[in-house]
Image 1: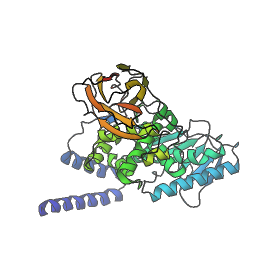
Image 2: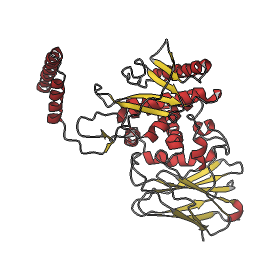
Image 3: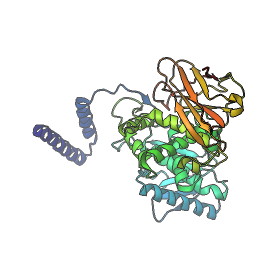
Image 4: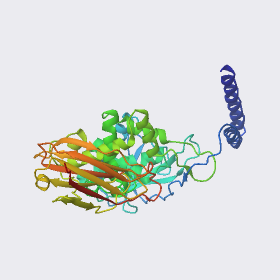
Length: 445
């Protein structure tokens, strides 16, 4: 419509003229007032959820500094840190910055010389816990952005410097790019990026912790403050972009926004809703992704790896058996209530069903969430021979599976997953933790 384009052009010219006048007069407030008036005419008042900006934190003291000759990066430390450690940390920081820049991730916002220059500052200090921190929101960026810095321990083993520096830089970069996102999402993404770049899942390698407690949620309740959620991100990357790493980067970009008015930052879309939208646009379903990963993670350290993600994880990171069923009929109750997208694993060996060829399985879950029930038949080597999944529950939290046993089957695996009642929100306390019970019996002919 030509008249619309014409009006927009006139508006843009008017803003440009007003900006030139205001700058000449040293009055930038006039431009802000005009922008706010235009937004108020063209956008409805935001009524969605809000979240607080990251707390402003004072930087730790430092007497030593080494600056990169290649990028806007500086490493600071106290007098007890050796020059060799400083240089090793700077090399790791330069490598992380170069690789993430090449992958299209945004560079952190300049900090206005808060560290002695415009560089991103990394502190080797025990004055603050290792993490990313905010100096506060910057007022001049179109999208919500924060000035940030990173801290790692000066007592790191030499073998962990690369991973810990990479993780700290990634977390600072993510906080700068989207300060409204939950810390657990930043930690999960930083751990995944660190795993891609160094082979370590963040500074603390939370994969073992996440696998050891599969009832945990993937993000808000994940191990190490969210870092365990890197398994979920690695799976999404493998499923949706075949290791190009663009999918995770692009959903972070999709979640970026601008808070024009009011207090607090706009909290929607967040990463969960952005992932849900992106997966749906691909013709896939988020809950199918959750269910598939719930089954795949069982095979870490068991049988032949059926998926590249399973092959890439440490074989020691096995999910435990929640309950072993040794007779028929069997009734199993949850050892732990399942958090949203958390799973439980019950097994039965062939001796329990003897010569039976058909079984019945019932799931009875608590109300308030949807449930997934999958039966996987395994051969003597632990490899999958057959799989059947019940339809996801809706208002009634009960499922039923008729199981036809393959002659090769030596073990039956039942996977139960809490599918939540909606896309989770990493900013809110979990209120959808639920328990369940399973009943397995022979089918009567």
